[in-house]
Amino acid sequence: MKRNILFVDDEPNILQGLRRMLRPMRDKWDMHFAASGEEALELMTRVSMDAVVSDMRMPGMDGPEFLRRVMRDHPDAVRFALSGYSDKQLVERSIAPTHQYLTKPCDEKKLIQSLEDAMNARAFISNKAVLDKIARIEHLPVLPRAYVRITDELSKGDPSPRAVGEIVAEDVGLTANLLKLVNSAYFGLARPIAAPQQAVIVLGVNVIRSVILSLHVFKSFETSLEQSFSLSKLWAHCMRTASIARGIAKFEGLAKEEADNAYIAALLHDVGKLLLNAQCQSECKDIYAEVRESNRLVAEVEAEVMGLTHAQVGAYLLGLWGLPPAVVNAVARHHAEDPEPGGLCAASVAYFANMLDHDVFIFNTHYARPQFSEERLAGIGGPEVVARWREAVVALGISEEGA
Ligand SMILES: [Fe+2]
Ligand SMILES: [Fe+2]
Image 1 (cartoon, helix red, strand yellow):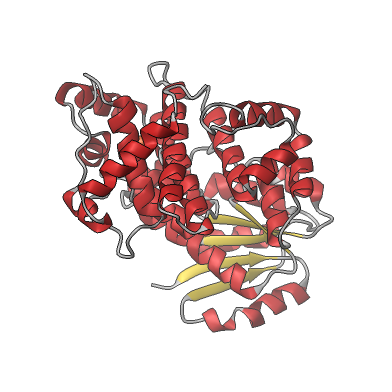
Image 2 (cartoon, rainbow, N blue to C red):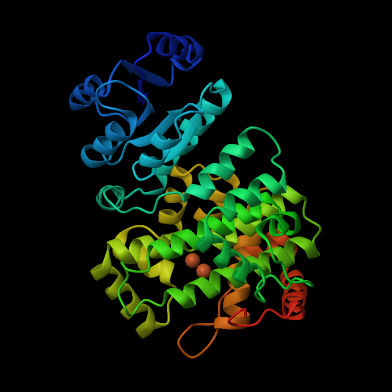
């Protein structure tokens, strides 16, 4: 089935340019064009759009206002903002309703790929009722400002640690939290880090960006979760899992990009739990009661009760935000029993890192000892390999609380 995509811009030249540039997509996309927010909303009452791409600066209804109305009335449409360099203030106002930002002029390949990836993310949620519920969260966490700006810098090329450090430093609270975190035992760094710029040099832009994202996501759920849900325990689990993933990647000499993706996926692998617990509280209560009673896996019971798992919900959110497909796939599959086709990759490392954290740190009377999938084990060369990783992980000296 063809996808419906709506482009909104008050400048006829820009719409014309998009129309011409995207002509090769005619077989896959039904493209619609509107010259104002008002016209676009009117069109949306007749055609159900899969995605909207909106200009920011428009007379009458501007981009942020248009996207806000789309979020309210058509929550499951993917929302992209197309902004110029001078639109800083408009970008600030559009952070809540926007899934992703693209800067003008936008490269054809990037636009097509970003739209396709974000629309594909919806396929992770096969249960329509749950999709509606989740897509409607008014307070679906939004991408943090610093993350958006670093991403923007990355899209212009290889940003200097100094430029990235300066973006972080503008936010005093973020800087404090980031420094506290990178100096904690989770990172096991030899020397303390005193400034964001230094953190970027030591850990790399991609890792810092994902740490900012996860700090922010966890923080944004602080107030919307039941008291019985332990945010700090989940945070500690995710941080340890990320450290373990990095340990495995290093042990196996994984290439830099794959190792970064494994780390990022491990760090964010359980964000779906936050979303599900905040939005489907009564179902989650039943799920956790059953998990405690029968000592079964959370994901297994979720699938039974809700028809989907926190892994799929997490992948949906990260896909909408435009995280690399390798990361989204790894998050989606972190409880999957079948192995990855290509051998050791971000997804298999994330799976084993999560399992090893359960095995080394979480395993107790309330949690069943994790059973590694036979197929997964065969996929990486057998249980001896995991036994070696386990030793390496223990040798890393990650402490339970990380600090
Ligand atoms: Fe999980
Ligand atoms: Fe987990």
